Length: 535
Figure (cartoon, one colour):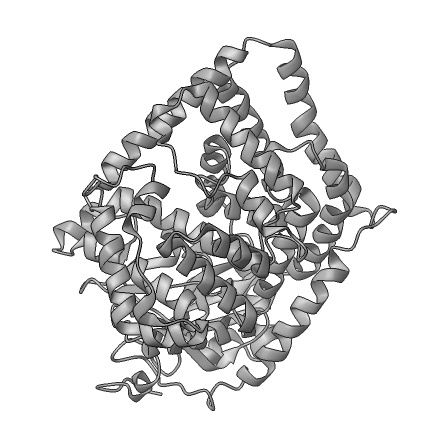
């Protein structure tokens, strides 16, 4: 498995040109089992999240004690100090919840990390606080790591590795990563799962499922997904991360998808054909700029606008065309190579849209570009966001989706708050929830939104939407139209509808991301001033 001048495995996957080894699906000894493991993991979710009348074990008392110590003082202080601003109150509870999550361990830290990627979905104070969970998780001692690797690989560390850095390159809730070199000379990174984390996660999911019904109607951030639904959503996301054989299979699937889409601006590290187990994953090491290192990239002559543009197209193509996409985009999971390509890391969470769900997702995207609210609501129902017996016409009418969109900057703070409350109340009334795939997609969109802010603030969003739509029409139009059962020539892209979704008039020719941020800041300021005025 020595280096080769041009790796032949690039004929089917988006790997680096000269990898430390080549890999095929037949070489990957762990691959046949991975599909079975994925089915078993998803089948386990209903058992883990089933409602329980009796507390599930002693772990529940630890969780209740830690969360109680975090929340009760905040509730008392909020009741006594009526002059505290909403922002200060949210910052206080966010800090308390983050510290509680760290005390409770991997499951709650992971939940915090997911929240930290949800800018726009959760309160800003909560997002900012939980961002500290991304890179401030203490690493396990090296002897613990050594024991896990040796147990899983069935040999002493010195028999497999020429060197193995005893300091972690990165440490997260589920695992940590170490730099190493194989006896055969290849530079690698080794992902090692924390001991007993799989058992602890399963215990915590049962505790969450028991606690969730008590929190219904008491947690504002759970507006469109009640606590039991949130627990189920979280369980669906985390169970697949507990076995690295599934993650390695995800790496091959995403690499194959990127190759099939001719996305040559993205690369995937190669997992090792044999050195992959439930708790240990050896993979190719890649080098590059941290995704947030804008100055470093620009000093190296990298076009950061192109980096963002590539990310948007690749992400949307994967979901819409192939029904698979990296489900956990954030700065720590992306490296920008010296030539401007992007390496995708960490495949524990991958979104998969199969069969009817992918068709529904296609219809959702088509409805968004053709300004068809009825079709969009139908697609949301078929994705599982609304109950199967939902009255589509009633939803469209109640949410006023068939009316002209009002520019939110023309509304007062009170009008905006009332409108948000009206929509949330209506959605709750229809039993809306957020399916896993849609949650991952929206979370990634939120990340890309922030990436544009950092890497390409002067990007013309309207121009980019037009260009991406033309690219999709030219490259995939006939295939997608055939799958949807429509005539590609009769599908008309409604740019005015897209502008309306941004609250813009049809006459607006372009808007940079910086200008869009200014509009958002104005909206948030008015809403915040109204809320503060009521207090």
